[in-house]
Image (cartoon, rainbow, N blue to C red; front, top):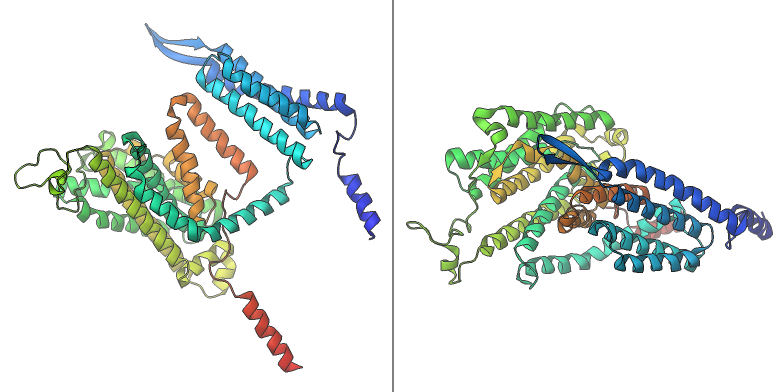
Length: 508
């Protein structure tokens, strides 16, 4: 095929840059109006029951208060956003860019019914303006799916290389974080929560990202670790430092118990069994009242001491030594928070170091082989039973450590803390970040856990924004933000090529 024929074929397949394939501006406006009406209708169906109707406690029962103004504003914003995006995609991005910036600016001055709607209007206008500006600059509204995946894979590969320099910087920042001026109690509490989910994500990443096994019941190991520490501390008066390795051991044993029944299962069947195991653990904790406290939970869980040397209390009792007295400091309740922060930071870094190192060992390469092809893995002589059990037990052990920390941080646990939604959140951290990517889990934990916590003032809109964000990321990047599925150890191509060339030269 000649160059002219290729150019003519490309001109046929690609629509003109200045407008749609037919109808000009009028056709583009009509299409954009139709898209906007459809999007507004869908938004109306969702916002009417969720936002427009609100039940409140009244005398004699419940009363339903209507908020139709908020519904109308939300539907209008969806219509304008969809209309602008469609018109920009049709080849008229400059007017859309100007209108979107005007809407974002006007939204700051207009008195909206609620603050979240005003925030959505401003953010939506800026997002539409960014997309329109990109369209005006590049001449096309969006990349094709294949091009987008290719570019994101290239970015993910570069990020994996940059991790060598990014990791020390991030660790240094994390170590200095409690002493920064803005690190108040609320900030440290959110940081501890994020680090807890980072540790859980790295633990689950072993079985999901490396071994390729979809585990929907990871919260069961989290619960086993938490209840193991709480019960041993309550009944045997053991310290946190004595119970921490035992909690990880019990969780690993639970992983072995789960691993045996599911050794021959794959895919959806495997996920259903793990989901059932998680529910079994929750029901046992809920109904075994004499042992676990049932729905009442376990209260008064002891907090960790400073490595058994000092307690974080204002006035020590008897021969006990207070932390602030040991170091000659003024008492502050932040001392315990800072210690908990460094404790979970150390546990998370241990999980990360262990995962990075074990990926290069034979068992880590066996997990990657199992992830890529189960049948080929067996044909290579790899014992799938052993590597599955190892993945379950090791992943469960880190979940148990995180559960013990959760119990000592909260001081109270109950079965309501270990529902299926917790497994879904931990799995979403792994999937959104990119299965197999350690850095991706960190980024996803900040997005999934950090942002909803910092924007807790959005109230009922918070989880709606969380779900919408997950849907958008799955549509835009199904394999996760920083997916990394390349083998940990590969052959050196240059060295292999030189050897092949030398061999061919000798043969000739």
